[in-house]
Amino acid sequence: MVDPVMLLAFLPAGLALNITPGPDMLFCMAQGLRGGPRCGWAASAGVASSGMLHVAVAGLGLGALVAALPGAFDVIRWAGAAYLAFIAWKTFRTPLAGVDAPPLSPVRAARQGFVVNLTNPKFILFVLAFVPQFVNPEGPVLAQFLILGAMMSAGGLVVNGLVGQFAGRLRRHLQGGTRTERGLRYACGTLFGGLALRLAA
Image (cartoon, rainbow, N blue to C red):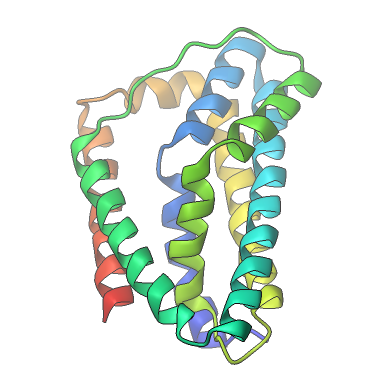
């Protein structure tokens, strides 16, 4: 259903997306610091669950749009390239900052993690910019979205959960301005810029 070559290309790109610091990672980090590893993993599970909901909605909408207007895929492709270029620019310029959050129980951490990602409009915009690069519009669009989205969510669950578990050590190394933080930021910014060029081409 998904081209194996595109799947192999998706894996490292999806991993780079997972390890890029964002609101979901910062939230899981904060819960790990304040409530311990269980809260960090619970928050990550909530974030991953809402991520799959975003992917399903995006896949349904894109599938219906492409069926009605075949040229819509090209419009989405160019809009996605522009958005990825913007994300690359923001990644280069914006250091990782710390967050403060009250301690939560694992159940509340999962619920709030779900809401944090569900109410983040940037995530669904990123899904629409990123996933279509690896989707064949002549095949079942929704099924491909769900497969790729499940892989992306599983990677995010593991990465964000580990960030929550080892939050103290990771936070020390990922503070804005450290060599590790700058290297991660520049590497991810370069990758997003390359994805924008690939999508435009």
